[in-house]
Length: 352
Image (tube, rainbow, N blue to C red; front, side, top):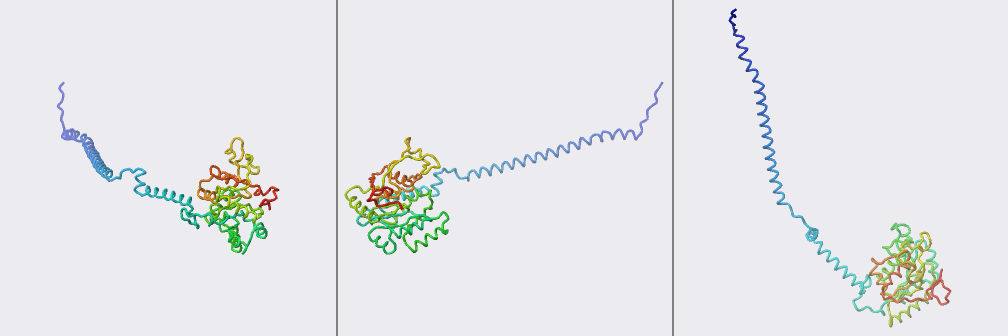
């Protein structure tokens, strides 16, 4: 059976011919997007490469202009600190040498011209505190001269001053009361750089000798506690004889009622020494003058002044002073007449 011829219509031919065209559009769009993406990525890579080139150029330029790393000595040299440090060290050495040769505040002496005959006999410092005005008035009414008699004593070469520091609250009523009392009596040595307190007594001794040396050139510097009555004329007589002896013998005199004893190592007990372990296994103090009344000759007091910054202090002032004398060519003079609590008849001091 023969098949009938198939008739292809015009619309069918159009549909067949347009189908390939419709299927190629996604490919074209994909190619277009790919091309755009490639151009974008290429542009970014080009821009990044250009930025890296610019940054590398700037970094290289910055590294060329960057200063070299300076050592500490280079920096000090640039600032001039090395020369300044040398000048400071030299100045300190010159100052120490000048002090040792007698160039002290308010008492400048030419090297080699110091004459003991031109010195006053003694500076007597009587320790006192803010609450001891009654004691001071008692002393002024008994053994300690006042007014014109005090000036006459100074003409004999003996200076007597109540020794006190400043209040922890500088300028408060305690300081003002002392200033007012001093204006009427003129018998205080007020140490501006010392804070008055019971626990500062060892430091007070160091400041007292240093301040006294700066203000007066004396053969002897005497430290007296505020609970001591003095036989002033007896003390002056002893010092005058000691001055005569010093012209022929050693002038490095450390005078007082010498003692030693056990170191108290239990906290809370009277006379406790926090640094008890420094006094050896026997826990015994070295020989030293009692705190009530002790005397240093001129050169020993100057030694304290010159070396005050490096002198060690202990819990008690008499032990501290004794430690400063160790290692020096000091003549220890143990005199029972300076034992204020003894029953010696010819002693020059007694407990008030």
